[in-house]
Length: 631
Image (cartoon, rainbow, N blue to C red; front, side, top):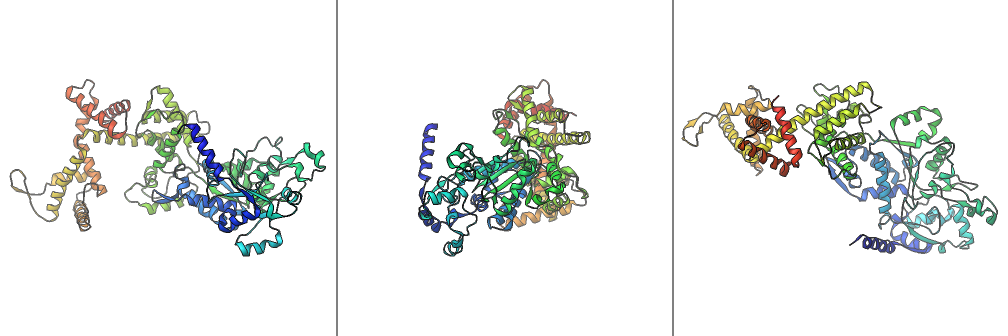
């Protein structure tokens, strides 16, 4: 289908969803599907819940946020379970403004945007269908037509609670257009749209001297006063403020705490009582989720002002810190690059990882836990195994600094520096060293970084460089092994044969001569020493390996070198150590001979085919590793 066909198809689908009928017909729908009469908070919660759950890093995460938000599983779970869930159940939480508080570029705006786009899509589903009094600028809930004295009877019959009063405009329309017969009032299905200002509102503070409260609550239509004769006639009023238009859905307040006091006080009534004052009318009912976002500095200034105590008590603050997982930080950068005009540029493997390592290190606090430096802490947070610690320690570490992640380098800074690296290099390919160089150069231009932080950040760049050095060496050494898996398996089987003979006090038979010989202690130690197994600990380690093999055999599983993390590490390191001289000579030779050139070409091909490099970045990697090995 071409684009116009798709547009026509979408229009046809939307036309099928449209519905119009009388209030009496609408009640038939309500009787069959109670969810059409749910509150705004309930609609948001059910929208999130209907997306289902996914598993990430051992934690459950709502699919709704899964492809856009990374590394904030704890914050999202708290947001959904501590705010949206109880608010959906009509608990007092719904009478609070939701304030997302966190550092710049931490994901607050993304969360709000996801909720807005999600509501637009959800209102087009059967489960999220929304109906309103036809012609009402506030898309008012049709159930407001039920008189107050009959609402208890309605609850007994339908099991639905009705909150709010009929608006001044619809009260007049009911009498003048429908003669008071609520059963004949026309009702229509509406579809949320921020662009069309249906069910989704956005308010941004501007100059306090020029901003009018009418931006929130609507204004008098002076052109119609002569026609209707009074400012208190609802037909002479424009119900087009953001609070009016956000009714039934959600209202976003950008930088809410910068608002003038007169604007903030309107929110007190709306959150607590579900209504607000506009013009010369009685209080106007509104059912909407109010979401605001701000940074920590502005929030601290706000709560320090005693005049804001009443509003502060009606705010639920949800901290949205920076992500603290290196692997998830990489995904943030991948997403930002994909959405930019840089997506055609080849970014070598690990280039984003070193940037992520640097960023996460700037956000971590130094733990008082003995033997745990900031690098080990970073690895623990990312789910890696760190000797002497486990995932139970991670929960303790998070409690040690509840505010961790609220400061540090933001993702936008990193993407800006990657952009700088691309422009400076003037080739469609950048590597980890280009990124680190750009990050380092950018620190001097970052006006908000103190001298103390700058020195600390320079150290983190050095740490990220060392991490990359290890990754680079391993990757090249792996690529040099012609058949890495086969070599590893052969070495492991040889080791296991010797370990089994050693533990069982047996002798081995030489496969060539048939002679019996003692277990090869030199071979076993050359492998065990790669991971720091001491002479005293070798017996326990070997017995542990045999026990693991036995356990696998009982379960009918095959034991290989990946079945034991430390054994795998030892095998890899041993292979790499044996190969180091070959790699060193081949990668550092200025004028490689024919055999060396052939080997280099094979390695480059393998780096391209199996590891994701292109020709430029693969050759750059080889030259860099050659220089490392020659130091």
